[in-house]
Image 1 (spheres, rainbow, N blue to C red):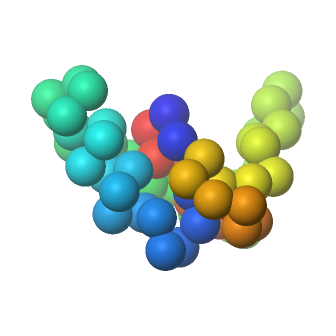
Image 2: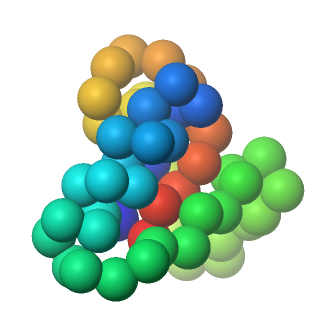
Image 3: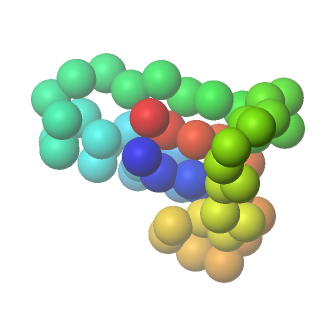
Length: 55
């Protein structure tokens, strides 16, 4: 699972496929709220705001 900014979505997709050998789902964090989980505020690749969840 990766929380990433728009710039790093492609990197996260590649990393997910390399690790799990399956296509991930991409969730827009602006449109989705989780009742039991708060996503990290920053991208895993840089210090920008995390906008997408690749899972």
